Image 1 (cartoon, helix red, strand yellow):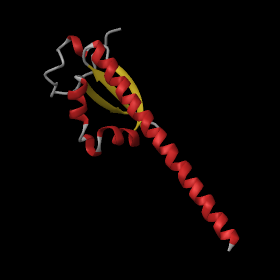
Image 2 (cartoon, one colour):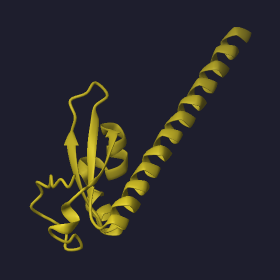
Image 3 (cartoon, rainbow, N blue to C red):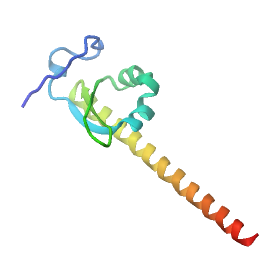
Length: 118
């Protein structure tokens, strides 16, 4: 099924209309992770679009997890590469978060042990 959902008016010059606007790659990500990917207020989004030669559209999903749906438009190769890149960046964010939480837990345990010794 070929679906065109584009609502943006500022379609980048590397996206061919209408063929690149059909069948977007789609994935969901939490809004906090999206802020990590694209920066505050999406400040890095246009740069990432340019580097990946793709175009992104974001759609808020009404969910308790605050999920955002990311639609990726462009040539087939560029869509797949951009999706892989964004998913990899999101995974890196999650790993860094887990590592930070583990370090925090370790520090808290160390502090608790220190209090017991005194």
